[in-house]
Image (cartoon, rainbow, N blue to C red; front, side, top):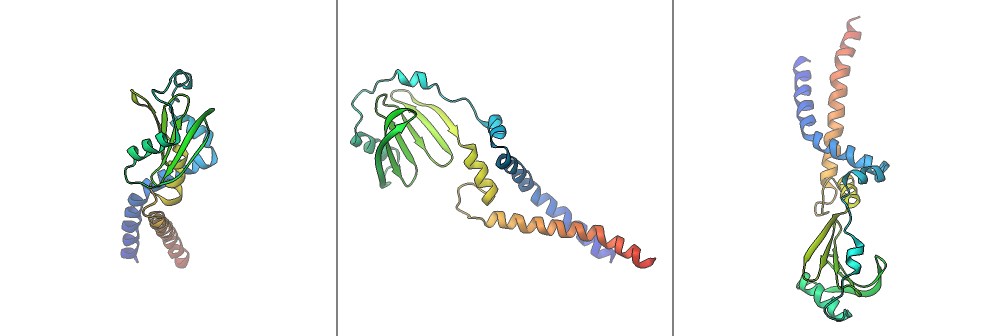
Length: 187
């Protein structure tokens, strides 16, 4: 029985080493799920000044074709799924949806945003990238649901973590209960 308890201690110890990174991730992402405003206030950087963007004027008229050409230069070879016009940050804009992301081109100012699941990058003509924003909510949600970013692995990593955590709990329960049961049997 002592060799079995030693085996349990070894398995329990290694499981603890393996699951601790995911326990920390699940703890942080779980806090985000319960208190998103508080967690995002810690992680969210300042926004780019919209007032500065209002002063911009495009070098040429912004059209549906120019939005399509810009999207094709950003994502060469990607088919365009949809192009439409709507307000974005209180400005009329062309929105171009591709399989890799979304381009938002401001009609009055000529600046544009490139949005993906995790990032929004702001570009100004002649200056390039002026701001980058990480969507922490998407990052935390994906980490909590799948244990990974990007979705390529599906939920298998989270499932493996859950199995390891279950084994960790069972080995801990056995290490705690076996000596107590043995003690009761001696009485």
